[in-house]
Length: 324
Image 1 (cartoon, rainbow, N blue to C red):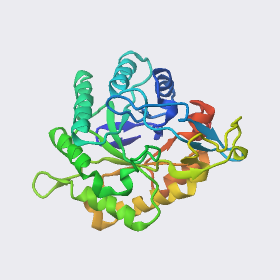
Image 2 (image 1 turned 180 degrees about the vertical axis):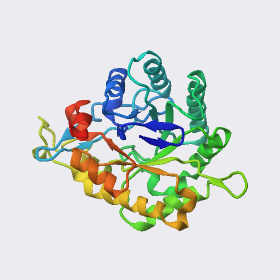
Image 3 (image 1 turned 45 degrees about the horizontal axis):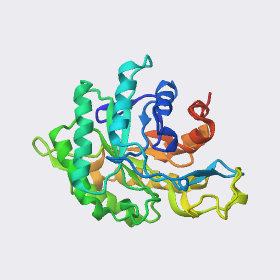
């Protein structure tokens, strides 16, 4: 069991936000699985995000890897909250938390989204000791036209992060995390941590509280290109996905994701970053086997997340990763 602020995740294996956690049926299957300790929704916007036939995924032929051209979910946040409420109030499965993944481009919209989620928490009688809902802000989708992942320019996130800080200050039981892109050099990691430090809140006496409880590291790697002969499907176009470029995930991303988790783990354990020592890492990227999950934990992940194998095998993927 891993406790992240007010949520408990047991077992420490979850799905990450993805196209296969888009609807009620998929979310219910994830919730009912004894091998998932929490369920992450697909990243939602306030009003839903346009989706066309060009938004799709292709699996590679020789490894458990994908390239996808998906953006955010076409379903609005309100739909996800309705589904979450339905599952939490009707399922016979043992209670487990939902991580509601969201995306917004301006502070006003984000505040509305957070307050709507908080209203559901109130309705469900969430307690400071044990919550069933957390929030993940997706800063890293690589497939949004004319909107590069803000996680790569961390200072640009300050208006959104300030909203999250302010909402946390009203209710410190609110569990907030950030889904981050794959980074490739040390300054990128330091920019994240320096930005988070500036948002910490004075507590009692000399104590300081960090509004952010977890990092999900990493999202897919954008600007990637695969051709149809590399995939196991029936793609007939010039490229594996209609948009040509997309985000690569699975085995092809594993080494870089391990490096990201390891680097964040090392930096968070550095005394210079003592203000952030409470941040947990959800390690994601190429978790396609029990061995890959073990590598993530060795790198420093408190919780392991998977999407690609889930997309390939269905909810059985988590039984495979658990080693059963």
